[in-house]
Image 1 (cartoon, rainbow, N blue to C red):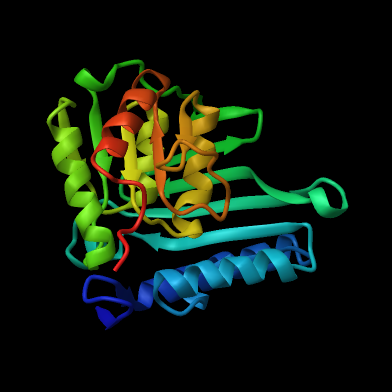
Image 2 (cartoon, rainbow, N blue to C red):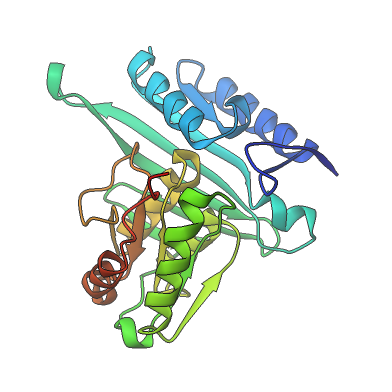
Length: 260
Protein backbone atom coordinates (compact mmCIF):
# COMPACT_ATOMS: atom_id res chain seq x y z
CA UNK A 1 0.00 0.00 0.00
CA UNK A 2 0.90 3.68 -0.13
CA UNK A 3 3.09 4.80 2.77
CA UNK A 4 2.83 8.51 1.98
CA UNK A 5 2.79 11.12 -0.75
CA UNK A 6 6.03 12.96 -1.44
CA UNK A 7 6.34 16.32 -3.24
CA UNK A 8 2.79 16.31 -4.64
CA UNK A 9 -0.45 14.35 -4.29
CA UNK A 10 0.59 12.28 -7.31
CA UNK A 11 4.09 11.46 -6.05
CA UNK A 12 3.51 8.27 -4.09
CA UNK A 13 5.79 6.10 -1.98
CA UNK A 14 5.18 2.44 -1.22
CA UNK A 15 7.09 -0.04 0.91
CA UNK A 16 8.18 -1.76 -2.30
CA UNK A 17 10.10 1.35 -3.47
CA UNK A 18 12.41 1.25 -0.48
CA UNK A 19 12.69 -2.54 -0.38
CA UNK A 20 13.62 -2.70 -4.06
CA UNK A 21 16.29 -0.04 -3.60
CA UNK A 22 17.74 -1.95 -0.63
CA UNK A 23 18.05 -5.09 -2.77
CA UNK A 24 19.79 -3.18 -5.57
CA UNK A 25 22.11 -1.35 -3.16
CA UNK A 26 23.12 -4.60 -1.46
CA UNK A 27 23.96 -6.21 -4.80
CA UNK A 28 26.02 -3.20 -5.93
CA UNK A 29 27.89 -2.96 -2.61
CA UNK A 30 28.74 -6.65 -2.74
CA UNK A 31 29.99 -6.61 -6.32
CA UNK A 32 31.49 -3.09 -6.48
CA UNK A 33 32.23 -1.88 -2.94
CA UNK A 34 34.20 1.16 -4.16
CA UNK A 35 31.36 2.46 -6.35
CA UNK A 36 28.94 5.21 -5.26
CA UNK A 37 25.16 4.96 -5.61
CA UNK A 38 22.38 7.54 -5.84
CA UNK A 39 18.89 6.13 -5.49
CA UNK A 40 15.58 7.95 -5.63
CA UNK A 41 14.44 6.70 -2.25
CA UNK A 42 17.50 8.23 -0.53
CA UNK A 43 16.62 11.76 -1.70
CA UNK A 44 14.00 14.22 -0.36
CA UNK A 45 11.05 14.81 -2.65
CA UNK A 46 10.83 17.60 -5.23
CA UNK A 47 12.69 18.77 -8.32
CA UNK A 48 15.03 21.10 -6.45
CA UNK A 49 16.03 18.46 -3.94
CA UNK A 50 16.56 15.94 -6.73
CA UNK A 51 18.78 18.28 -8.74
CA UNK A 52 20.74 19.23 -5.60
CA UNK A 53 21.25 15.59 -4.63
CA UNK A 54 22.61 14.72 -8.06
CA UNK A 55 24.91 17.76 -8.05
CA UNK A 56 26.27 16.83 -4.62
CA UNK A 57 26.74 13.20 -5.67
CA UNK A 58 28.65 14.20 -8.80
CA UNK A 59 30.78 16.86 -7.11
CA UNK A 60 31.58 15.00 -3.91
CA UNK A 61 31.80 11.49 -5.29
CA UNK A 62 34.96 9.80 -4.05
CA UNK A 63 34.67 7.16 -6.75
CA UNK A 64 34.91 7.40 -10.52
CA UNK A 65 31.75 5.29 -10.74
CA UNK A 66 28.20 6.31 -9.81
CA UNK A 67 25.12 4.11 -10.03
CA UNK A 68 21.91 6.13 -10.58
CA UNK A 69 18.88 4.07 -9.62
CA UNK A 70 15.10 4.30 -9.67
CA UNK A 71 13.97 1.07 -7.99
CA UNK A 72 10.33 1.47 -9.01
CA UNK A 73 9.56 3.94 -11.80
CA UNK A 74 5.81 4.15 -12.19
CA UNK A 75 4.74 3.95 -8.55
CA UNK A 76 1.23 5.26 -9.26
CA UNK A 77 0.79 2.58 -11.92
CA UNK A 78 1.98 -0.01 -9.40
CA UNK A 79 -0.46 1.19 -6.75
CA UNK A 80 -3.33 1.08 -9.27
CA UNK A 81 -2.33 -2.41 -10.52
CA UNK A 82 -1.46 -0.99 -13.94
CA UNK A 83 1.32 -3.24 -15.31
CA UNK A 84 3.58 -0.41 -16.54
CA UNK A 85 6.47 -0.25 -14.11
CA UNK A 86 10.21 -0.20 -14.68
CA UNK A 87 13.39 -0.63 -12.69
CA UNK A 88 15.97 1.84 -14.04
CA UNK A 89 19.71 1.50 -13.42
CA UNK A 90 22.30 3.74 -15.08
CA UNK A 91 26.01 3.48 -14.38
CA UNK A 92 28.05 6.64 -14.94
CA UNK A 93 31.83 6.89 -15.17
CA UNK A 94 33.95 9.97 -14.60
CA UNK A 95 36.18 10.65 -17.59
CA UNK A 96 38.65 13.32 -18.69
CA UNK A 97 41.40 15.16 -16.89
CA UNK A 98 41.38 18.00 -14.32
CA UNK A 99 38.97 20.84 -15.22
CA UNK A 100 37.63 18.91 -18.22
CA UNK A 101 36.46 15.94 -16.16
CA UNK A 102 32.85 14.96 -16.77
CA UNK A 103 30.44 12.11 -16.23
CA UNK A 104 29.11 9.84 -18.96
CA UNK A 105 26.63 6.98 -18.63
CA UNK A 106 28.29 3.79 -19.87
CA UNK A 107 25.72 1.14 -18.88
CA UNK A 108 21.93 1.37 -18.90
CA UNK A 109 19.37 -1.23 -17.85
CA UNK A 110 15.58 -0.97 -17.70
CA UNK A 111 13.72 -4.02 -16.40
CA UNK A 112 10.00 -4.49 -17.02
CA UNK A 113 9.06 -7.13 -14.44
CA UNK A 114 5.50 -7.58 -15.69
CA UNK A 115 6.59 -8.44 -19.24
CA UNK A 116 9.80 -10.16 -18.15
CA UNK A 117 11.72 -7.84 -20.47
CA UNK A 118 15.18 -6.40 -19.89
CA UNK A 119 16.47 -3.66 -22.17
CA UNK A 120 20.22 -3.07 -21.83
CA UNK A 121 22.89 -0.93 -23.46
CA UNK A 122 26.58 -0.28 -23.08
CA UNK A 123 28.32 2.78 -24.46
CA UNK A 124 29.36 1.91 -28.01
CA UNK A 125 27.94 -1.59 -27.67
CA UNK A 126 24.38 -1.18 -28.96
CA UNK A 127 21.06 -1.89 -27.30
CA UNK A 128 19.33 -5.23 -26.73
CA UNK A 129 15.95 -6.53 -25.59
CA UNK A 130 16.34 -9.83 -23.75
CA UNK A 131 19.63 -10.27 -25.57
CA UNK A 132 18.40 -9.49 -29.10
CA UNK A 133 19.50 -6.24 -30.81
CA UNK A 134 16.88 -3.51 -31.15
CA UNK A 135 16.71 -0.23 -33.08
CA UNK A 136 14.54 2.86 -32.93
CA UNK A 137 11.84 3.34 -35.54
CA UNK A 138 12.19 5.23 -38.81
CA UNK A 139 8.78 6.96 -39.02
CA UNK A 140 8.50 10.76 -39.39
CA UNK A 141 6.39 12.87 -37.07
CA UNK A 142 3.23 12.46 -39.16
CA UNK A 143 3.30 8.71 -38.46
CA UNK A 144 4.73 8.95 -34.96
CA UNK A 145 3.38 7.60 -31.67
CA UNK A 146 4.71 10.12 -29.16
CA UNK A 147 4.75 9.59 -25.40
CA UNK A 148 4.89 12.14 -22.63
CA UNK A 149 4.50 12.43 -18.87
CA UNK A 150 2.37 14.14 -16.28
CA UNK A 151 3.32 16.04 -13.14
CA UNK A 152 0.60 17.76 -11.06
CA UNK A 153 2.48 21.00 -10.54
CA UNK A 154 1.62 24.24 -12.34
CA UNK A 155 5.18 24.76 -13.56
CA UNK A 156 5.25 21.35 -15.25
CA UNK A 157 1.62 20.78 -16.17
CA UNK A 158 1.17 23.93 -18.25
CA UNK A 159 4.02 23.28 -20.73
CA UNK A 160 3.11 19.59 -20.96
CA UNK A 161 -0.50 20.40 -21.87
CA UNK A 162 0.74 22.84 -24.54
CA UNK A 163 3.09 20.15 -25.82
CA UNK A 164 0.37 17.51 -26.01
CA UNK A 165 -1.89 19.86 -27.97
CA UNK A 166 0.85 20.90 -30.38
CA UNK A 167 2.30 17.43 -30.95
CA UNK A 168 -1.13 15.82 -31.09
CA UNK A 169 -2.03 18.04 -34.04
CA UNK A 170 0.99 16.78 -36.01
CA UNK A 171 1.66 13.20 -34.87
CA UNK A 172 -0.39 10.05 -35.35
CA UNK A 173 -1.20 9.99 -31.63
CA UNK A 174 0.07 10.84 -28.15
CA UNK A 175 0.30 8.42 -25.23
CA UNK A 176 0.96 8.97 -21.51
CA UNK A 177 2.16 5.73 -19.89
CA UNK A 178 3.27 6.75 -16.40
CA UNK A 179 6.85 5.46 -16.39
CA UNK A 180 9.69 7.42 -17.95
CA UNK A 181 11.95 4.36 -17.85
CA UNK A 182 9.45 2.25 -19.79
CA UNK A 183 8.74 5.01 -22.31
CA UNK A 184 12.45 5.51 -23.01
CA UNK A 185 12.98 1.76 -23.33
CA UNK A 186 10.07 1.55 -25.74
CA UNK A 187 11.50 4.37 -27.86
CA UNK A 188 14.72 2.35 -28.05
CA UNK A 189 12.76 -0.74 -29.09
CA UNK A 190 10.81 1.16 -31.78
CA UNK A 191 7.44 0.69 -30.04
CA UNK A 192 7.23 4.43 -29.46
CA UNK A 193 8.57 7.06 -31.84
CA UNK A 194 9.47 9.67 -29.23
CA UNK A 195 9.13 10.80 -25.63
CA UNK A 196 9.29 14.33 -24.23
CA UNK A 197 9.16 15.73 -20.72
CA UNK A 198 9.50 19.24 -19.29
CA UNK A 199 11.34 18.11 -16.16
CA UNK A 200 12.81 14.71 -15.36
CA UNK A 201 15.02 13.40 -12.56
CA UNK A 202 18.36 11.74 -13.35
CA UNK A 203 17.30 8.36 -11.95
CA UNK A 204 14.37 8.32 -14.38
CA UNK A 205 16.50 9.17 -17.42
CA UNK A 206 20.09 7.98 -16.94
CA UNK A 207 19.57 4.43 -18.18
CA UNK A 208 16.92 5.19 -20.79
CA UNK A 209 18.91 7.91 -22.53
CA UNK A 210 21.73 5.46 -23.20
CA UNK A 211 19.24 2.87 -24.45
CA UNK A 212 17.81 5.31 -27.00
CA UNK A 213 21.19 6.53 -28.20
CA UNK A 214 22.64 3.05 -28.54
CA UNK A 215 19.52 1.99 -30.47
CA UNK A 216 20.21 4.74 -33.02
CA UNK A 217 18.00 7.46 -31.59
CA UNK A 218 18.63 11.08 -30.65
CA UNK A 219 18.32 12.71 -27.23
CA UNK A 220 18.51 16.44 -26.57
CA UNK A 221 17.14 18.96 -24.14
CA UNK A 222 13.99 20.75 -25.29
CA UNK A 223 16.01 23.65 -26.69
CA UNK A 224 17.97 21.27 -28.91
CA UNK A 225 21.10 21.38 -26.74
CA UNK A 226 23.07 18.37 -25.53
CA UNK A 227 21.45 16.19 -22.88
CA UNK A 228 23.77 15.20 -20.03
CA UNK A 229 23.32 13.34 -16.77
CA UNK A 230 22.26 16.54 -14.97
CA UNK A 231 19.87 17.73 -17.71
CA UNK A 232 16.15 17.75 -16.89
CA UNK A 233 14.00 18.81 -19.92
CA UNK A 234 14.15 16.02 -22.51
CA UNK A 235 13.27 15.02 -26.04
CA UNK A 236 14.20 11.46 -27.01
CA UNK A 237 13.16 10.13 -30.40
CA UNK A 238 14.07 8.33 -33.56
CA UNK A 239 16.23 10.32 -35.95
CA UNK A 240 13.46 10.86 -38.50
CA UNK A 241 11.12 12.71 -36.13
CA UNK A 242 13.55 14.55 -33.85
CA UNK A 243 14.10 17.86 -35.64
CA UNK A 244 10.44 18.43 -36.49
CA UNK A 245 9.34 17.47 -32.98
CA UNK A 246 11.81 19.92 -31.49
CA UNK A 247 10.44 22.72 -33.70
CA UNK A 248 6.84 21.89 -32.76
CA UNK A 249 7.67 21.92 -29.05
CA UNK A 250 9.70 25.12 -29.36
CA UNK A 251 6.85 26.89 -31.13
CA UNK A 252 4.52 25.78 -28.29
CA UNK A 253 7.00 27.18 -25.74
CA UNK A 254 7.72 23.76 -24.30
CA UNK A 255 11.33 24.34 -23.23
CA UNK A 256 11.22 23.17 -19.62
CA UNK A 257 9.32 24.21 -16.53
CA UNK A 258 7.23 27.37 -16.82
CA UNK A 259 8.40 30.21 -14.57
CA UNK A 260 6.05 30.76 -11.64
